[in-house]
Every structure is written in structure tokens, then in C-alpha cells.
Image (cartoon, rainbow, N blue to C red):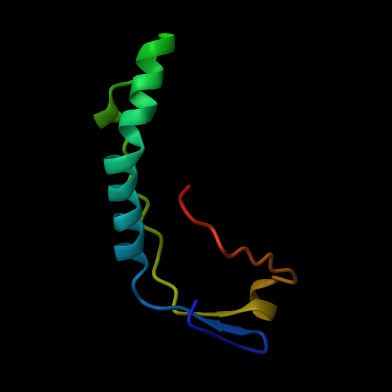
Length: 82
């Protein structure tokens, strides 16, 4: 989100890039840990290449909360890797 003015929110136009970076980070840092756990406790799971789904939502650079029927926003900040 890049700004807010009344009921109007604006967003950067880099959603696809941000999601791709998040997916890549997951592949680099998390997938191996999960796969080791799956192997350790012998869980039946499809191979890794069958589980990757790239989510590509439409790019949204502006949203009118009133028109979208949104009346509540839960703001969560401060997340960091531990």
C-alpha cells in the first residue's frame, strides 16, 4: 500500500514481482525444511514440483473501500523472520 485518503487506498504496481520474490524465498529457505519433515515422519505428499502454484492476481493500484463494501481493516505490522 502506498497511500490512503478517506475511503481510497492506493497500491504500488509491483504485486507480481513481490509475489514472485516471496515464492522464491519460500523455495530457498522453507521448502527444504518442510520436505525433510515430510521424509522424517513419512507423510505421503506429492513431489515438490507438483506443489508449486504461482498465484497471479489482477494488478490493483487503487481501491475504494466504500464501493468494495469493506468496512474493517486489520492492520498487522512488524513481522520479521525469527
